[in-house]
Length: 577
Image (tube, rainbow, N blue to C red):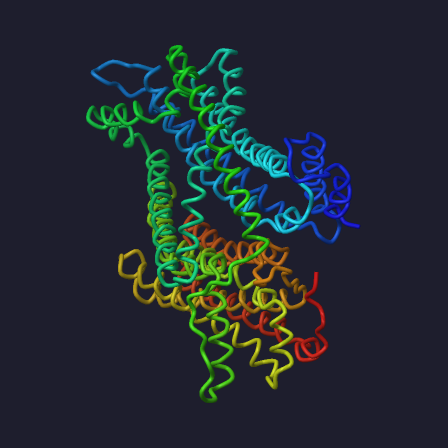
C-alpha cells in the first residue's frame, strides 16, 4: 500500500459528516497525508536522484551568484551621492525595497501556481468530493499546505537577500529578529494577493484553453519579455565585472526617480523601513493591517473557489471549440503521424510552452548571452572567441529546447498502443516524432545563426558552421531522448494523458546537453586560449574538432536509437504506472 492510500485510510474514520466546523483531527490527518505522499516520492524506483541533484545545484548556483554580484552591487549603490552627500540609510532602504518587491512578485506568481495545483489540478479533489469531509476542514488543511509552500520560498529568498546585505553593510541583532518575523509574515500577504489573482487567472486559462494560436503568441511574448529582462540583468553584471561605469548611471535624475518609485512600493517599503530602522510605528501598523486583510481575503476567496474546484474536478468540462473533423480521403501515413504529433503539442498548453515557445525564443537567448559573453571574454582575456562561444551557447540552449523530446513516447499515453496496433512500420512511428522535433529545432537553430551573423557577431561562414553543428547535436539530443523515453516509458493516468511531472528521462537529457555543450564549446575555447598563450598557430582547429565531435556523436546516437528497436517495439507492453 503506497503512502497515498495509507494516508487516506488513516483519516477516513475521523470524519463523519459534511457539515459542521473545522475538525482538528481531520486537518492533522490531511496534513499527514500530504507529508506521506511527499515521502513516498523518495522511495526507490520513484525518486529522480539526478533531477533532485540538478535542481539543488541550480538553486545553489543562483544563490551563490546572487550573493557575489548583489554584494558587489550593494557596495556600489550605497556609495552613490545625492545632492552631493552620502545617505547610507536611504540607499539601503531603496535597495531593500526593490528586492523585497521582487520577492513579493515572485512569491505571488508561485502562490498563484500553487493555488491552481492545490485547488484545481489536484487529483485529491475527486476523492474529497465523494468523502464525508466538510468544506471548512478541507479549506483549513489546504490553506496550511499553501502557507508552508510560501514559507519555504520566503525563507530561501529573504535569508539570501538579508544575509548578503548584512555581509556588506553590517547590522544589529535586531536585524536578524526582524528577518525571522518577515519570513513568517510575508506569506500571509502573498497568499492574499495570489488569492485575488487566481480567479482571474483561471478565467483567462479557460478563455484561452481552445484558442491555441492566441495562447501560443501570448506565452511566447511573455517568455520573450522575461528573457529581455534577463538580458538587462546580464548587462548590469557585465558592467560590475568590467569596471565602475555602472556607478555613473546613478545620476541625480535617476536617483530621484528611484526614490519616488520606492516611496510607493508598499508593502515592500514597510519591510525595508523596518529592516533599516528608518520606519515608524505606521510601518508596523501598515504591515499588520495588510497581513490581516490578506488573511481575510484569502479565506473568503479560497473558500469560495474551493467548492467550485471540487465540482469542476468531479464533473469535468466537456466544452470544446474544436469542430469535429472527418476523414474524407487517404493521405500519407507519415504525414498523418507528423500532424498528430504537432497537434498533440500545440493543443496542450504545458507542452506548447516547454517546447514550441522555448524553441522560438532560443535566438533571443543566444543573442543576449552572446552579446554579454563576447565582450566579457574580450575584455577579461583579450581573446576573440565569438565562434567558440557561439558554438557553446547554440549547443547548450539547443539541448535545453529539446528537453521536451524526453516525452516523445510517454506523452502519447494509451494512444501509443492504438498506433502500435495499426499497420504502420515502427520506423514510421519513431521518425515522425524525430522529424517533427528536427523541423522545429531547425527553425530555431537557423534563426539563431542568422541573428548572430546579421548582428556582425560572427562571420556568415561561421554562422553556417554553427547552424550545422547545432543541428547535429540537436539530432543527438532528440534521438537519444526518444529512445531513452521508449526504454523507460511511463504513461500518465490523467484523463487527458498529459504528463505533469518531470521524470528521470528529462534529467538525463539535461545532463547530456550540458556535457555536449561543454565538450564542444569548452574544449575548443580552452585550446584556443592555450594556443594564444603559447603563440601556436590555431588555424582551423575549431572547425575540425567541433565538426568531428558532432559527426561522431550523431553516429553514436543513430546506433543507440536503432539498436534492436524493431524487436523492442513489437514486444513493447510497458508504459503503465
